[in-house]
Amino acid sequence: MADLTALPIRDDLRSLTPYGAPQLDVAVRLNTNENPFPPSAMLLDDLRDALADVGAVLNRYPDREATALRTDLAAYLGHNVDGTWAANGSNEVLQHVCQAFGGAGRTALGFEPSYSMHRLIAQGAGTAWVSVDRAADFTLAVDAAVAAVTEHMPDIVFLCSPNNPTATALPADVIAAVADVAPGMVVVDEAYAEFSHAPSALPLLAGRPRLIVTRTMSKAFAMAGTRVGYLAADPGVVDALRLVRLPYHLSALTQATARVALAHAGELLSTVDLLKSERDRVASAMSELGLRIVPSDANFVLFGRFRSAPEAWQRLLDRGVLVRDVSSGRHLDGWLRVSIGTPGENDAFLGALAEVVTAEPPVEEQS
Ligand SMILES: *Cc1c(COP(=O)(O)O)cnc(C)c1O
Image 1 (cartoon, helix red, strand yellow):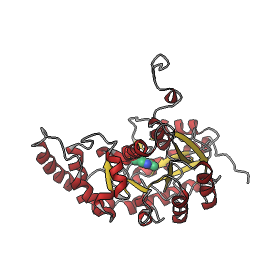
Image 2 (tube, helix red, strand yellow):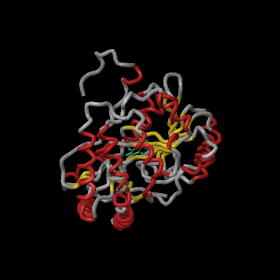
Image 3 (cartoon, rainbow, N blue to C red):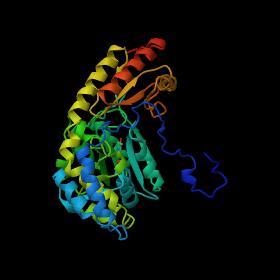
């Protein structure tokens, strides 16, 4: 990166590092938790038709309210349209939340290790970040969560269920307890909800006007390239987000593409069961290799521990398999994260991993 010290950049940005999952051209890419299955020919046919219709009016601005798309998303969630919001990825949804409810002089709190973008988006909006540790097994107990929120009284609390990168889901009682003591907004990031056995926080929204549930079309929905994320909340929250969104933030092409995907929801989500059984297969094969794995409720698995996770990551890459090196995160020394791919990709990963583990056995855990 260029030297930023010469630029009059905000002081609070100087120490930050940009989000940077490597985008490398290798055979087996299991590092960003996408659904490995591309859209079907049937979906692509419908997409061509929809984009031709939109293309005919590309001289006009799109529907600023994305009403048709939000109506489809609301129907998918079983939530009301007025309380459903969409943007370019759930990252932009989270940015809208931080712009409206965070900012200078305000704080956001997260339980780490968790999704690194929560912190980055909060800080990008000028919000101070408070990091609270999860337990050693990466779980979060009701007492610990409530104590942290009561101590820091943050303007925004981030919960993530299932949590990235640990893949652990939160029980509903933790979410309800945090929502009931938090003085500000509580965001439950459910990017991986479709893969989880744990119940969604959606039923908790009733009677809790400061609770927000965010979702994405990037993971189970197999539409990462479309860039659509959404949230469900009280309609008042959506009114607040309208103050900070840019006019026409969702392009006509994006809205149309997402609607075609939602019309094919059954087909797109039909891969979820296969991915879950592949996840369980990959996890037990990794255990048999002598690795520690964290029980996963998502489409990825945290595994370790390696004496040097960056070296193990490189050895896998040398064998054509790209996983995620998360080991620089809080309490993640020695850990790597693998996304669940197609059965063939998973076999390639397990084959490469067996060689890596033979060359460099995992660290023995003392209890
Ligand atoms: C992948 C991911 C997102 C999704 O981001 P998009 O901008 O919707 O692609 C959000 N939260 C978590 C925890 C994630 O892992």
